[in-house]
Length: 179
Image 1 (cartoon, rainbow, N blue to C red):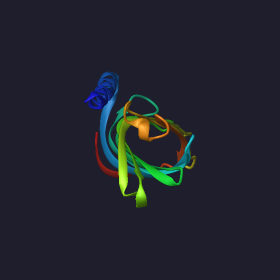
Image 2: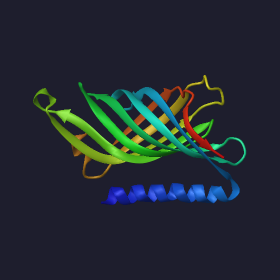
Image 3: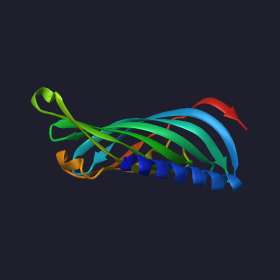
Image 4: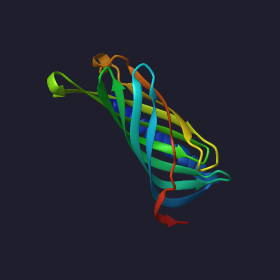
């Protein structure tokens, strides 16, 4: 029950931030999809790769740059001790041309046992920060952490995952736009 309360708190914070910014900014409805593939390194475990499909909801036009508010489901695979652990999360993101800030919650899944038929799930929180330049050809540098909820991480070697990686942001697929 506690992880849900924290996630609701994060959502309330984002809504408050958007409402406060909306007083000085102009809200602009812009629904789009922006898929991306991320490659990187997870400290203490190894190589990581994943898929992220951001869904843009609206943006705030303050001055330059405009800030996009996104929902961002993600799935990451982390190589660890001859197995692959899966990190699945659902995030809320704030993104501009220079940065991307994500916060959300999800679960870590690992398979174990004879022929990997058993699996263990641990719930946790996902935080991330990505930075780039204004050029669309420059890759984004990203730092991401997945913090496992206390009491669930004993099956895993650490209570958190800390990842550094990068991705290219393609042009988003515009679905709907309204001023």
